[in-house]
Length: 83
Image 1 (cartoon, one colour):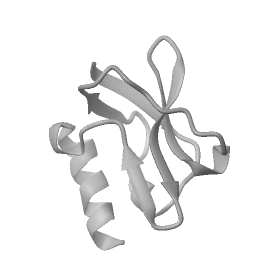
Image 2: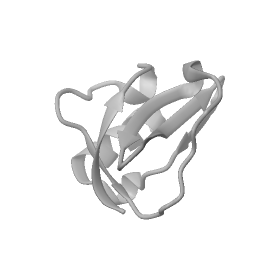
Image 3: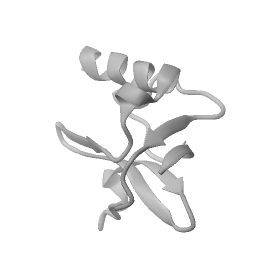
Image 4: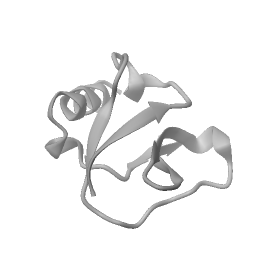
C-alpha cells in the first residue's frame, strides 16, 4: 500500500506519454498475476512482482488508484478518455 514504482512491459494507448520514473498509488494488499503475459500492461514489485495493470481486447484493469496518483494518474485517465 502506498506509492510504488511500476514498469511498462506492453505499451498501448493507455501508456502513451509515460517516460522515466512512473509511480502510482496503491491502496489494496491483494494482487493479480495474469496467465498470458501479453495481457499484462504494467508490473510492480512489492516484495514480489505482480501485474499492476492488465488489458485484453477492449477490457482494461488497474490495481492502483489513478485518481490518487497525481500526475501519473492524470496522464493515465487522459489516455483512457482518448481511447
